[in-house]
Image (cartoon, rainbow, N blue to C red; front, side, top):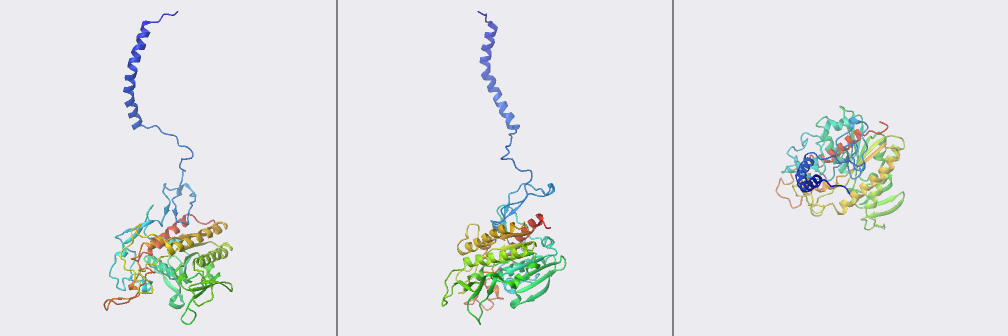
Length: 439
């Protein structure tokens, strides 16, 4: 048997008694150490951020971003921005132009010149939820479209947006009207010599071939859904960027054709045709148009950019043809007015057709680029931005009239529609950073 040292027994006894107190003393020291100098934790490959993430803009029809081509183009981490989700906020700066500094405003949209007494509608700006929408830069826009032809094609909303753009660009460079034709000058073209830029307007309220109702003819429109309207399409080869806008004319009575076959009609009492409404017709018209551009331009290997401005809701309180008015003087707050019904359905059709056309265009290698300028929701929130009774000069000069016609469809200039072109410019900037292969 071995002999146990009494010193060892005594040492073990002391150690057992001191160990708990030592641990109690070291614990707060350790906690302080980790608080001020935390250990780095390894990041797994699944959660590690990539070395470069491009700043992108998103619309409901732009769902992906490509990587930058060089380290110099790498940008800070940012959440991709949906420019169409947001709210209207006060802006003391006001618009870039006014009814006297811009000479291309259609008389019916020159609200201040026609005596509109309130000006508060001029001091709101669209604030996207995820980012900031920059103020319009006319020089930047002109530089991006230097030596190009931008064509606005469609109904009076296309004209409204075009005239807004002309006013904003004219703060930096004066446009020259070089062509006009048609009733109410529905076909016009301007030239900016400073940048060799052409901007044109083509009246085509259905985009496809159509015969508009008239006082001397039938009281309904005729639409031929399988043929694009050659009044504008014959110039397609000279168009570098095409902005399309349709919607309101599809609400009117019409008979629809494919070839010589009648498909049906919308609101055609007295005619022996099947009532089919207008939603599918709107879809067919836009599909025919986008396919025609892709086939004609892409088939020849020519690059073209296409913007589809979505449906812009009206704000009549009451029936539009029974003294309906739009008397509000402030925007709706976010959540106060929801997008629903016909406005939502028409927007949905236009977004879906742009997405389908993108799929077809992608098969051509990206020479055709498309975006939906999805303004429907932000337009819905601006019941205060229409001419209302001031579509005519000083409608109450002789006191209150029993019946005054109101325009609650188009937009005052300057006004909310200037925002459409601010977002348009952001699309142009994105395209400028991601040039086509051919460029």
